[in-house]
Length: 220
Picture 1 (cartoon, rainbow, N blue to C red):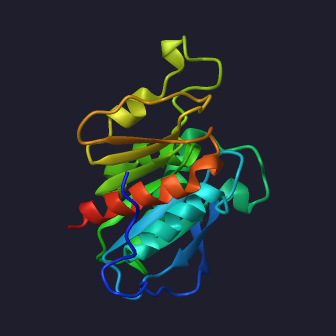
Picture 2: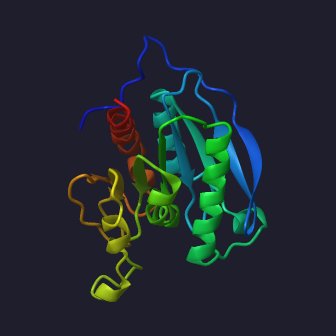
């Protein structure tokens, strides 16, 4: 696998310091941590997992890869997390809040930029379910949770249909020992396996490279 390049110029592309934006949604305020590229060629909006936040190491690695490709990046905290609750909201509420945040960002700081959405684990599921509604040109899935651990033998518990329904290109980056399973993909979707489990912590360098390469291809 090739390593991610440093961007289009001879030096590392510059980006603004992260800015936190509170955004109202139908289910309470969400928070977007926006880091704008100096001359952005696209935008990447990422959501967190069910039990974690936007500081997850794989989200940080993907952010760095996107910024190196001159993508502005927004990391989105769902309303339940902003409110201090640990238990995720129902899927319909997550999707509605996510869509409201993306619409607000696209009307403001990310206006007129090609949009890629995504996230880790549960955040990846939200991005898949809302890809058409948000107008995404691609979806980035970090550690897509194909099924709950120990449920691989029960087809009714699979989330494969959420991936299959996405009509735009999808990049899935999955740990080779992920207890949440290994998704199946076919064109226009791509699967990259990296060392590690659901956290992807063991393969962070391997996460950044394919993310950067894939984003670069999307906006060519």
